[in-house]
Image 1: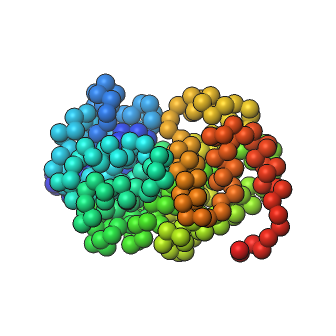
Image 2: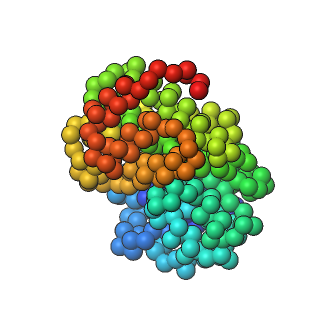
Image 3: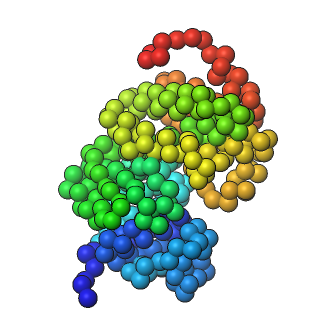
Length: 332
């Protein structure tokens, strides 16, 4: 029996964390899958399935579910896959002795509008080696071994290569990038646009409006991204356009489903309860609102999503506000 290539701790036993753990195990690695709910972790360990998030998909033998944070200290590689609201506390729990960290979390810090690499650097120090994993990925498809492609971006190209190599096997392709800001940024903002696309479809506005929202949403992402130093090619790649199209067009997207629910007249709280999992676009809408104001960047689609979620504006009123905007050049 061959030894595992490396040991990785995946922090976050939701759908995406579990899917990444399965992919790492598929590639021959030993994986510690940490979850904060000790009872749920015990069930996973006994039943060898994450019944809540990925029912019917068996956990490979190389995955060890753990509930104690002590189990993951000093592990060779750590990948954080918790919701964005828990990112700061999770990284802080690892402590500044952690000098190499990757995450698959897609979001921003809602209270500050800060990107996740900024939070990680604040906690771990400016010299920490950091990486973000992002792209057009539905967890269940990754877990089932369906063809998938992601981008691994890092401030250290050798680290990006190491992580990409660890994940790249079977039908899963991992590309590398040095645009750590762009890969993290794209994975967060696309969720806000996906809520808008869901609202438009829920209101019966047609395929034309969906295509327009995706295209103009990408323009908003690129405008703000440019102010932050994001590379254009990143926004046109897997972590930008690729993830945006996936999230806006398929009903497996929680953010799209959230928009559909709002269009049916449900409140944000009611839709969140129906979905039963974290919808990253809700917090991201508030964070993008802060960030765009700070950078003086106009983002009308994201702004209307913010108004619906956080100021009580009705979806049809948000659409009317967008349609009433003055005519302008497409590329201004």
